[in-house]
Length: 255
Image (cartoon, rainbow, N blue to C red; front, side, top):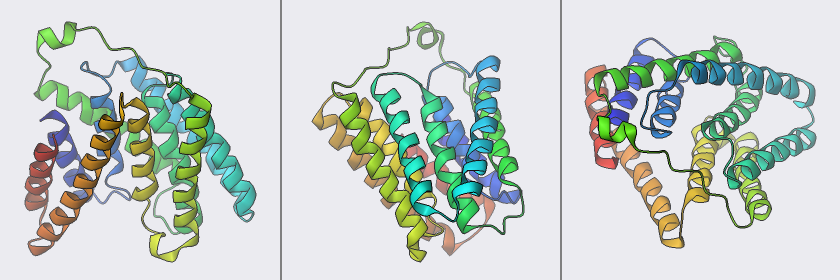
């Protein structure tokens, strides 16, 4: 309920205020909420914001230097993806891994394919991260966690048996998704595709069995189908209240 409310309210507010990437804040908020039962601590929120600033600026510089040399740029992105997935496979990094992958995907794609943005890249990333933090805090304030759930110990992250091989395969898959967006005009605006691929790959790394992995794939496919149906439904009567109610309903169904 908490995640569905945050995503629907955050997306509606972002569209109403004219955000360049309206799904970014709700995306970060959902990750923060799913990362633990407790609200995001202030120190961790500051750390996440600092990570966004540092990583965003780093990839802006990298894209500026290697933007006209796609082979070198893709090689550097692939290496970064590989490092992130190795850390994830070893049970390290936590939510910062997904945040780093989102930045590594977004900055080159937006810089190379959408150079006519009304806001700077850093402003878009900072706004998305801060709105995600605020949305997650508001969600906990409106729907606090029961005391029994808050006192439950956190489950330690599980490491993969073959972290290097798994990380290499994941990095290749994500790099192919980014390359597709850069080289195929039909996917030039589909920045959500590689972000979804990154999210799915991280979820698959946490799956305890083949059956769990297949379940995650099925749920993500179901989410894509429901999102397409919701978009067509909203197009029948495009309005902010209708968007909020439709997104909330889809979120509750998936939840």
